[in-house]
Image (tube, rainbow, N blue to C red; front, side, top):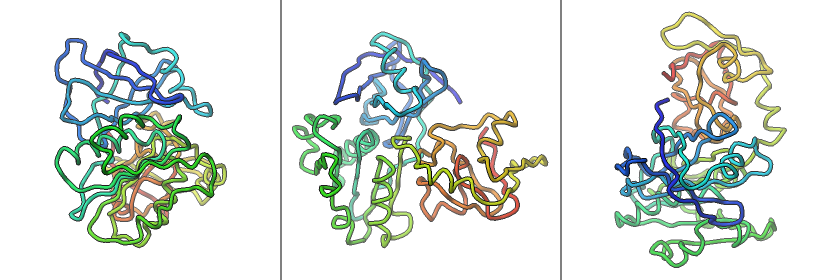
Length: 322
């Protein structure tokens, strides 16, 4: 993965335990272009990388702007970045990559963000607003204090399209997604947030046309224990890279990702819960047993998320990520 070194130009706290980092080129040069929905892989002090969405308008190439939430139950990567990274520090990041590409619907676009999932949705909203395209913008959070960019959104040029909702941790005050998704047409839906929100939107939009609803979640919620157990069920199968003869046995108690990493293959990964899409591979041959929350049904034939999905066929063939 190609990387570049950027300088942290500024740091600010957006909400309780949510911090924004503005990353600029050391020489002030314009950064490589990106599209709304794109993310970076950021090297964190605790080791490895974490995936963070870009929230700024792609028209602004003076910086990459990311927001990071301190996750008390996480693996420590985001926490180490927050605690050990200050303005003026240098950080290593990948070039922008987009697995959540914005393709506005002919009848408009529905944007749904939950919690820290606001970051890619905010970039999309800024682009749609600048282009004059019709869209609705729903931002769901637990409370005002936990809502990143709240004051800016309520006072800015996105306020007209924005519906902001707080449930204060009470399921009885959950936002009525079914109502806004009751009718289908030629709109497109983009949703980013915790796993529970993704499940709720998928259920509410089950009647929408194929491929019209897209999801993204960068590990903002850990996979429930029962889902992790379910992902380990089933008989073993083989995985092979396109153009190679060597086959790797994937037993029932390991994921494709684990097996390939143990074999010394350099495979991209991040959340390892089937919610972020970092380990999406092109499926060349075979039938997958999809267990992720990233792919929509029109992508099932040609893609597989290897951290959690398995195979229905005895062998699957994937394209080498390199």
